[in-house]
Length: 176
Image (cartoon, rainbow, N blue to C red; front, side, top):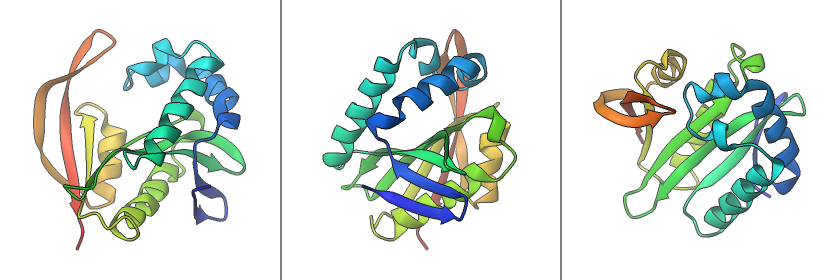
């Protein structure tokens, strides 16, 4: 099983069917919070939703299309981080992440993303890591800036977030 140790309290672990209940419980408690920046929480109404998500993620991992991991902090699943897409022919990955509001402000996403970037530029031999984030999502934009990503610009009307049309800021980091 794929696992990256970030520090003594933090690991990134390939999703597993055993995580479905934990994912479901987080979303049940934080549906409105997560739905502010993510489309899918309103549809996540059962453990079966997450089992399907995990199984598709594992299939995509097997086929080299993505890498979807749980963020485990102090032995508790607290969020998700992934290469949503892996483009071998372009030597590029696109990153996504979310974190339970209860665990924010501890550097969990910043440290997890830093570790995943090292994996992208090391073993995966990618040249570019890219993140697309709603322009109003300042915490996510701050993560990008803390890690040295370059702001490439904004794309208008990029996503319909549960009835709200949002623009996306595009950030990238190049191997170097």
